[in-house]
Image (cartoon, rainbow, N blue to C red):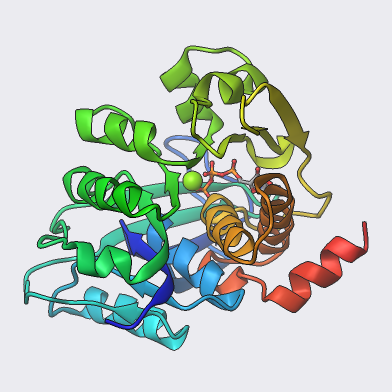
Length: 302
Ligand SMILES: Nc1ncnc2c1ncn2[C@@H]1O[C@H](COP(=O)(O)OP(=O)(O)OP(=O)(O)O)[C@@H](O)[C@H]1O
Ligand SMILES: [Mg+2]
């Protein structure tokens, strides 16, 4: 198997992005200003972000023989991302989401339909060892934890994005990931802390290269270094947000790209924040992923 930079285990989605002038109150009526179908999902979007930044990427999710699966395959392959499909699962479905974007703030609300998703099986060391970095989310915990164990044994860095920690396997991923980047609501639930800064400190473990907590336009708090004592804040870059769909996913993909480019975690966090801010300026998830030149240009303007 050819070596790739980033291997992704997790969710791919089809997002129908619906823009409304303002998010409707329950029981009200509103008109839609635009509808657009795009690829989405934590893992697929992180891979697209990394691919846009020049990484060779591989997706290890299971897709079926249906319109939504074909859409995901096409969007990944358009970005040069290889989809490995070892066994046929004709009935498998990607996640389907309706993303409602409030045009007055750029804030997104996501409604997801997860039925029909099939976990990847037959994870061998071969596929993991053919990768320089592993990305996992929480969607297929048994498969992802197995992938993480193999990656740990092989010394391959793991970047994890968990939006739910309510299962033993996900808690094991939480323990195994060397680069753990959680959204604040999850970090708060996991640590019981009331401040993101303290949550980042609590998520750091010996041997963990980086524990980070992201909180949208409030930026990111992260603990790095051999003792993890130092928690620093990376402010969100000041942009006029048009649509924050996928900012977290792009943050993870860009972090992996910076890490594999040889940047230490604190610089990778800054690079990731810049990529996510540029994404916030564009409508949609994957369609808004910036390329490396755009991120470097943006960073040099600060
Ligand atoms: N409005 C914004 N302006 C600038 N940067 C933003 C904005 N929203 C998000 N970001 C950047 O993206 C990072 C991740 O965003 P956030 O914490 O919202 O992720 P998330 O909750 O995982 O969202 P999702 O997974 O749905 O994209 C933030 O730490 C910040 O750097
Ligand atoms: Mg997220």
